[in-house]
Every structure is written in structure tokens, then in C-alpha cells.
Image (tube, rainbow, N blue to C red):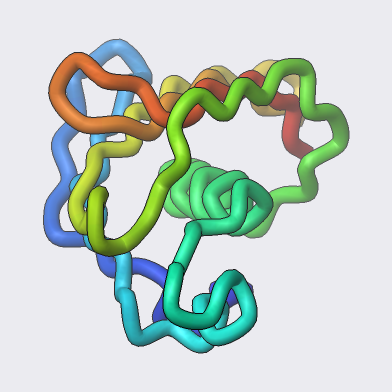
Length: 120
């Protein structure tokens, strides 16, 4: 994990079509919030992207390198107070050692982050 204690996985499920759902809890005590921003913690977009990459590594069962970020749409300002729990939905397809990742971070019908990437 790149950022110690940024998030905790509270549960997982698999839909059978290469789609995995992770139930996540953000840790408001994580040191990243001391600088981003003191007294008004905001989850850095890059930390959420890294979290999705780490979840893809769990699905793939190995370390991966993000070679291309095709789409990254941040639609909601995520904070550990307003959004302490959320779901990460990942679809990971592999062909010839390249993984195509489609992922969203959100809760219920609201999407906070949408991402498409290639990983090796």
C-alpha cells in the first residue's frame, strides 16, 4: 500500500463477469489529511487513483504498473467526513499481459470518480 492507513477494505464481492466490488472505509486519521488540508480534510484524487490501482493488483494477484490513464473523471469532492464509506467497482480484463481497467468509486447511484486505465 503506497499510503499507510489511507483506507480499509471492509468487504468484497464478485459478479462473475470480471467485475469486483470492494467496500471501502477511508481513515480520517491518515497522515495525508494533515497536509490536504489541515482542519478541512479532502481526499486527494491521486490517492483515490492509487487506491483503485492497488485494488486492481489484488484482483490480478500481482503488482501492476499503470502504463496509460485513458480517463479520469473526478465528479465529487471526497472527504473522509462526508464520504467515510464507499464502493469501488472494478472490471479488469487481461490480454497478452496487459490489463484493461474500468473502475468507479462511489456510493449507491452517486459516482465520485470514474477511471479507465491500462496496467502491465
